[in-house]
Length: 318
Image (cartoon, rainbow, N blue to C red):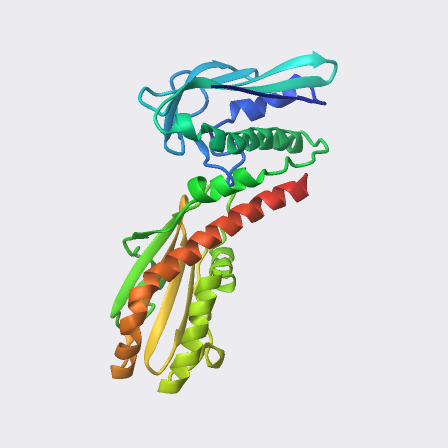
């Protein structure tokens, strides 16, 4: 496999140095995150520094400050090869940026490459788009091919998973007694919102359609047994800190709290419930079976939507 992309930019080569030298770092201005799995190096760019791109392990194999960065995959990866970013002057005030990916594919990747390549191509072209934005140049974002978008959803998308309930000040005093608790988390890529309220809004204001349908069924049933419909109660923000929002509602049958916690590299949604009576126990018995699936679906969707919104905001800024 050999894949080459290049673009000529109307800028002096010296202005490109921060882009290459910051590759894989906390302030990476070139890699298109959160849309794609971030490139993470365990230190400033220098020969021998190791890192990851999603599940792929790699290291810096060559480096010329401001001019060239070469990453090589570790032995045993599905692709054994190198990835190179380099810049060169091509005239007064003009610089060519080039990206080279080459190597030997093994395992399932040999057969999947035709499906993966559109996503790879779009990732690299999006890097060039970000370079233009960084340089203050006019940029038309590279359209995302439908196959690349489908692969991102199927392979590259972050999915929420069950985790231990974190100990936070807001959760510690959320309810007098906790009869049920669980937590789910999703990885938050660089560039995604850090405000927990933004995540809370994305979670509860735009759930998956099947969750909306399930809530509609709940609405149709609960009124018949004397439990308030959602239109008869509120589910709003009760308290917040810089990194956590606590939401909830109090009902005759049970009290419910949801914590949305923004940690440096993930978002955790925790649920705690206090059941008041037999009616609450009867109601919550079936709800607790589907609750984890619903929360994971809502959190996964929120991560996808906020990732997409982050890219759209970058495009508007261009």
